[in-house]
Image (tube, rainbow, N blue to C red; front, side, top):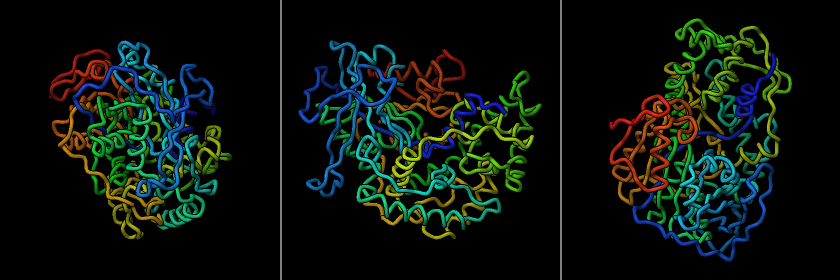
Length: 511
């Protein structure tokens, strides 16, 4: 079977170890920031960024931050930042920080990438700032030195066995946690959302900015929210894009559990597409047939996996198909890859082995992702604590087969959280705009509403009747894009929550 670009896209995602969870968000004051150019901090030495395909205007520098904020005079680490200056000095408002998703994502190249999709008036007004969060190269980096097989996304975000057992998952958790403790060094204990928020404030100070605007996506919305709680007078205009429930008790455990809802919200959209007449990748005659077909294929692959030389793991089993479903639901442009894989599985074939990122990259990303999730909140330690939850999840949500409530590396993590999770509160400066797709596999609308509730009058939410993870300038629509662009450029927010119907340019209706 020929591997198309859409197939490669899904399997690149399958091989990447980043948990594209997504989280809740950030806050900003109403007071205007200085329009004057920032004072250049002497610690920032802007030089050419490494890498290809970057905007020639983008420059990089290192900001020195404490490894352990409880010992600010102790060891220091570097956080690498990037910048493309605002394009119209007379219109300059300040700096717009692009906060990446993950955990384990980087926005270092985003000023050259998605930052250039911003409308001209936004690029005129702001320096676009990216960064590689602590632990992630080229910042001071970490690695767990995991076995190659444990670099598969299905090990970091593990699926129960076909019979619902979590015994193998607990063994994997112990093996991975032991490797992180053995090889991760002292830094791996100090990688968390709170640490990243504190690093952001060091970045702000190094840039010479009194306040910071931000566009956080997915997990970056949680980073932004925590930053706004810890440094409420340091935020300006904040956009939180693809938001999750900020529950301070569960944190990332809740984000994983949200896949149950996210898949149920998104599968009908896939089913309509996958059954449409004229679709070259059509898998069924009607939308109602797609779900049972998928479940039958996954169950058959549980019983009889198809060998897949060169893949990781080297077989197409039921959980690999389920993982491909999750990854394809992040954007409708990946729907064809899932349909092609379903058709191949039905015929007993597989596409060529997916191209994986280099192991060194996966080692780094996996270590940062695991450390952040496990250091943010304590996880249950016993198999019994997961087994009951997995059984309920498998029964109520067969598409996700128990994965969202399963044991991951955090079940054996050797380090307790250094601080309690931050509670997002309704007291504080406003200036926060949430934008959220109605059908989002990773950060479902139900979780975004919880964040909106937590912020109270500090925030307004624009809900877009679109499908995909990432709304603004991505999988949303023109109505939502206009609302966000207007806010960034002028500070004008809707005076209440808005819903943008389907379509590229219809006006939002108040809800």
